[in-house]
Length: 450
Image 1 (cartoon, one colour):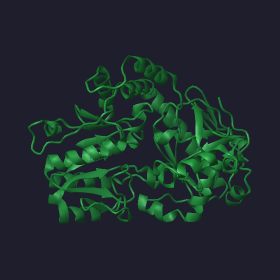
Image 2: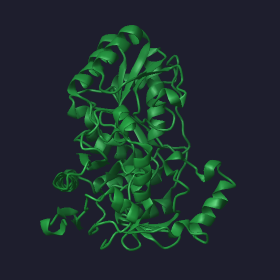
Image 3: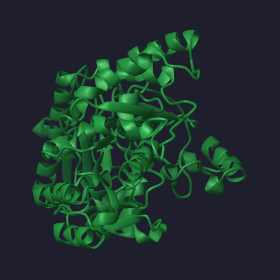
Image 4: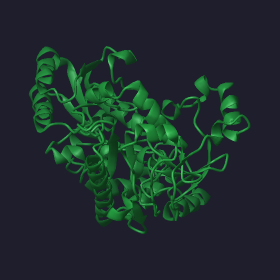
């Protein structure tokens, strides 16, 4: 159990002789900007990690950090969850990967079926959420014979789908503002007969969890029904935000649901669930045929990890984690209000966001507009410099998003000791939040809020 007692700043990973600095310099000689993926970009570089256990990350220089990101929601039970590691170890001794079926594929599909708002679904497996989205997009194009995909501005759908005009989108993507039903209606009127699908995340994490309005969700449903387009629900992250995902919360019945993250038990996994009428698109005699392969799709290691992770995350555990997140956000918002601080917190299931304004944004585009560069710099510093001592709180790189996991730990957070953070947060004291094992029940003591 990790205990945070006093928040401090650490810059050890930035020192001239630090192991992180040496590794960053070495990486810069072999990798563009010294990184293998955009989500780990930091200025001037990120601390390199060496090990992890439960809710704690340990960097190569020996500093420990309390993890509230859990590899972007992929580790619902925290690091080194014993049932998953034991299952994967046993499986690796028996069978790792091969171009043949295995019994674990159907076992995991059976566990996934109740989690999606598709009646009697069929599944195809990929190795990441990004791949799942791309397979769903290709499936829609083959099923409808149409080229266009509607996406909403500043909503993230993985590495290959543009989120804005600045990302040089393919002409096959039609960008529409989020939560703008009138503009979506007009887009359908102008392009409806060429639209293969609408790709929608109804609670986008990159927009401070700003949910779709009911009117907007209804316009998505109506436009797809009127013009014969498929509805693809991107639930890679938001599947844990509501029972059966966000599409179900809005009463929508998507044609395809994209999943990923925690359901793979921390291993590479990205399935799609589809209605049964789409199965013919994968048939050898379908014209055009949707060819779908993948060396590691359905590999036994990812399958057994997913089975073990889901087995330990039943309805009671989901409810406990949601309740814990609710308590954290309520106490934070109460603290912000009492201190007259222009900050707020929002949750969706066990996902949460800190927001550097009192009024939460109505859309991802508004969120992007309201976060200034200076605020991002302050929040990025919080990402990896606040220690307790040698314990650091880790959030998303803009600190917008965080996630509670089921890894047991006890956390007490007090006033930051870093001078620059103190200047920016001079009206905020983060108090102490206690998370207790095994269900991470929140106990917040009013006397601890200074």
